[in-house]
Image (tube, rainbow, N blue to C red):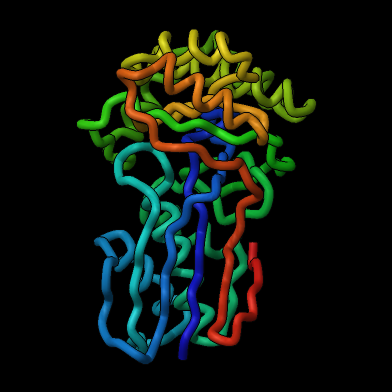
Length: 288
């Protein structure tokens, strides 16, 4: 037995707020991944945290299997506690890898149903970009990924935000902001690339009333200075992404020059989400 599964992380959320009285977010999958390898060449669980272990146990229970007969190793490009969907990617990759190894390919909807039982989930493993209630797993809209790369900045390198513990705080604070038209923001998002950038920027600005970020105004001013279309924020994390055209390497360099005091995490593309599988013979598939 040998296979590997990759699930992308995110640069925060393109939008996060309230829709018809329930919390929702719009995913922002990027080209940074959690990878889970299943193999009979080693034994035990390597790199799996508590949430990932719970995800494996839930998968085995769903499939009616008492134990997992192969080794499983998890590695990740995603920093923890920064709002880059590290836990969500871990959980989804473990569920997908375990089910595939056991001969059953679970659809994204089933993976999401299991994942939300562990924590509010950023569904970067769904194809495209999706709007969903991340607490119940209800997906209610799908979009093409906007054609941007993101220059990633960590506004507070020393801080980690625990998504689960912060979620109740976020809901309480966001629910106290009824003047914000998140439904209108979602409608705007679907009207093309520039509209999507404008909606993401407004959501990031509104979130400053809930979880203020160091250097937010400086990053926004720098983005304006280089002509960036907008911003995307980790609504329960410390990361801010500056949206750029996909060929904007010089703009990313200029941003770094404008923001020497802010930790730069490199750049990445916004992509269609999914579950990317590879077998030893080089065969590949996307189950998202």
